[in-house]
Length: 437
Image 1 (cartoon, one colour):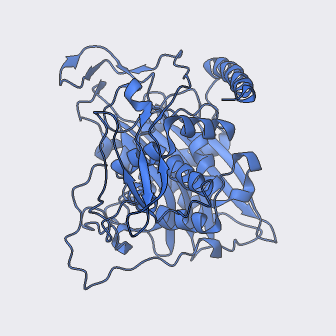
Image 2: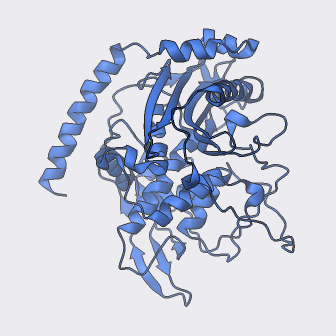
Image 3: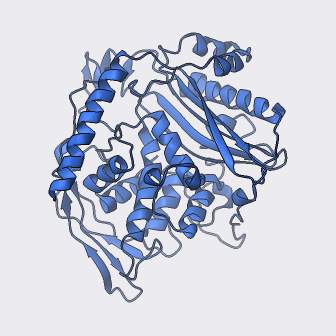
């Protein structure tokens, strides 16, 4: 590692200390416009959550998009109770930056004869690691970065996230995000129940051609970079530990994954509108990569032949919280390009919504915490009774506002019109219904 990296790292650490001090003393940001807009919704549950944002650790970012006469977009962000120092567990939200970083890393390996569709065989060099030589969810039966990303985005499967983490490496993940200006980001954990030390290790892997010949070998890696865990983050009154024992102490999130809602919104914006952000904050992706991400951020499981998911369980609005009502469908002409996450009582959605029929587009991001008994890991969270109906009401409040909002120039949304896949009626494979997500 060169001297310039350590100088840059030192500057980042000093900036993080300064930002951390500022965040510790700053008040959450609430814009009067958004507050008034939300208060117009008279639903009783929605109003109860709005009146108690601290109890629900609620944060909302609404991004208005306006186009000029050349169709160039501009973005105006409005906040409700937004506080980058207010911790929420990102859960599956971390799959979005890892999908993007995996594609970026592949683009840095040009000349190796590999791409996102190349078969990837994952080995193990530690007793807790799991090799992967077959992916039974794929039509080919072969693992690949492309298939991992599809599974991570379509219904938010967990094992593909672990494999992307192993490909990029703990060090690569965090250095890349920090170098792009997302300095408060921290992704330290796979979804495997590993210790902090074990999560520093990542597997060896091989990209191979159709003949099984190795095109590129990546050795096992170990992250030697340190993390700043000086800010203690504990929630709740009690928790169940990994041995199924009730511990009458708060649950410790200090060393868990951590990204602000604004960072997640910016990562999604960088994927969908790369030219809208400074060059430093963009990712090195090809046009095909951008189209690939757009497709699987918005495609329905029912449209997807590979993997073939059970559509009775994984319906159109399954991971579209802002439109998840009893119909389980989105309004005609609406597509949502998004990522969601839910764990430990936290539920989060970061979305770009395009209504092609009405010429409407905007972004919406929100996170909420629902844990009435204040016990973590007991499986008793109010997702169905509080977070889901609240996020739906939030989504519909903004959607109704956007449909009625006057625009100087109607947006041309052709860049988001995707030719989605179709299932083959002759495909008699049993659909996947039981997955870890």
